[in-house]
Amino acid sequence: MVFLSREQINRIESPNGKSFTSVDTLFCIADALEIDIRRLFDFE
Image: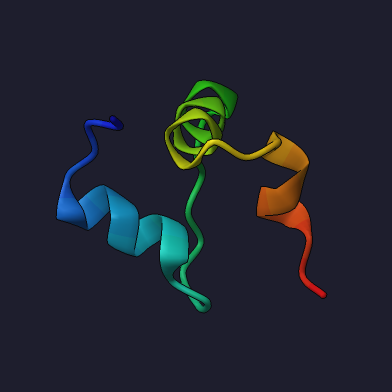
C-alpha cells in the first residue's frame, strides 16, 4: 500500500502540472501495483 494523499496523487497524474515526484515514491507505487517501475514511463 502507498500512503499518499489525494492531493499528491492529483499532482502526479496532472498532465499540465509541474510536479516533482521522488524516485522512492515511484518505486512504492510500482511495488503497490506489482509492476516493474519502467511501466510507469511506458506511454505507448
